[in-house]
Length: 122
Image (cartoon, rainbow, N blue to C red; front, side, top):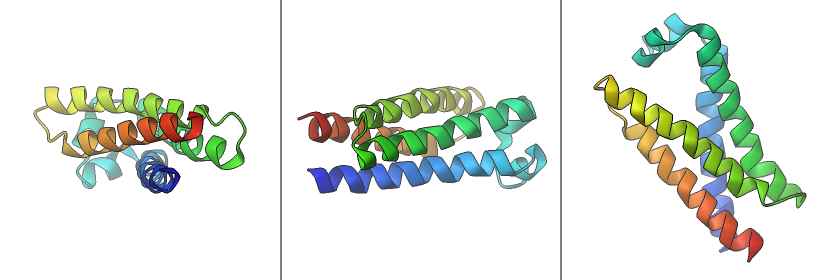
């Protein structure tokens, strides 16, 4: 079970880190150019804030479990990222865009949280 947690947590954290870094590094026009049309409805500061939150989630998913310092924070970080992803699903649905990437990421976050709670606390 511990191995399953680390595999799922690593994939989840890498996903969050990748999309978060993309939002922090690229301009709004650059994001629109790669298909993130939802960014047209948000300010640059809002987009960068979302990106920073995703990076924090990635770190929060890995570091507490890895260091053994407050490992309960790892599944909690996954749940926090899930809350952000639910917002993404709502935005994509309202804009009549595909929410599939956010749904897949949500499933990863849920799996990370469940595995984290069961292996790190059990």
